[in-house]
Amino acid sequence: MSAADTGKTPSEQIDGRIAELNDWRGEMLAHLRQLVQEALPQVTEEWKWRGVPVWYQDGMLCTGETYKKAVKMTFVKGAKLDDPSGLFNASLEGNTRRAIDFHEGDAIDEDALKALLKAAAELNASTGRKKRAG
Image (cartoon, rainbow, N blue to C red; front, top):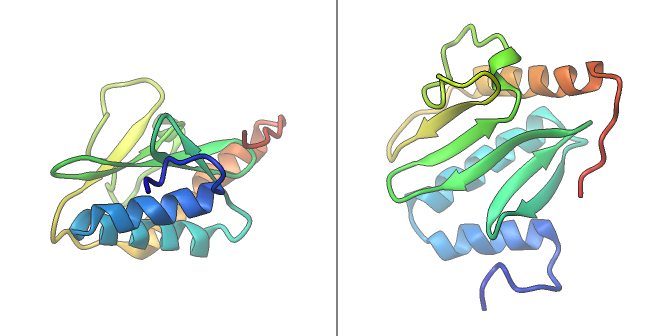
């Protein structure tokens, strides 16, 4: 049974995706998800675009995409965020998004990532229009 089957909550679908990967990418996605939840206890999860975990707080924050050689965390308003630790290493050319590609064996600067997540949530909250996941 695929994680994309209907009738499952977004969190159950993300759990399913992590289990389906059954390799370092699943472990990385699970770790990133945990860090999102630790940084932002009020965050909500959605399952979009045929299999992409998406995290929301006062609007869309970031996605957790899995590829053959990377797990990509894309911040939808990343170009507006300060990144003093230099975490962003992908999608740097755009005017809106920024991403972090994590590869097998990469260490995660957990404090810097949590700070970036909190900054993204603060940016969403400061826009004045609260968007609901969905």
